[in-house]
Image (cartoon, rainbow, N blue to C red; front, side, top):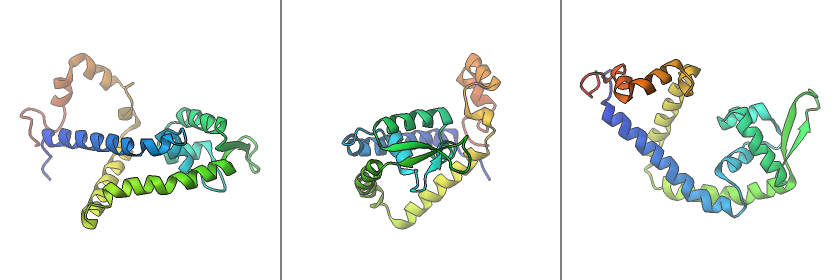
Length: 181
């Protein structure tokens, strides 16, 4: 398999970032009606009726535990979720929706889905399936990355910052000519 051109890779990255940002902007007014952020709605929508541990909620949200804990704190202050001790493990905390949280979720979800459908629902089904599969594959690749590559606190990241962006690219698949191998 021939490696893709670095310009195509970077253009794709920028397009994915821009698309994600625009979709978040699209739903922001819907969430604002309930004084929710996208992260708060994402967490709220991942709490099943039976409840969920904070650790599991963080995993489902693809966020770190401290971030999700702060989000849950704010949702709790808003009266949308409750923290309860687990009946099976007193050390564990279970997050559950309050009746108000369930009402808010039931009110927002169809509006959120409709807004997203207005855009993605216009894409031909075959192309939407292809997009889904490609994004799934990219997420699988990201899951396979060593944890050291995901954060800025790596030795290589520090070296790359000192050496500059060209030094970082020089060791990648596009080294030399700006084209794939």
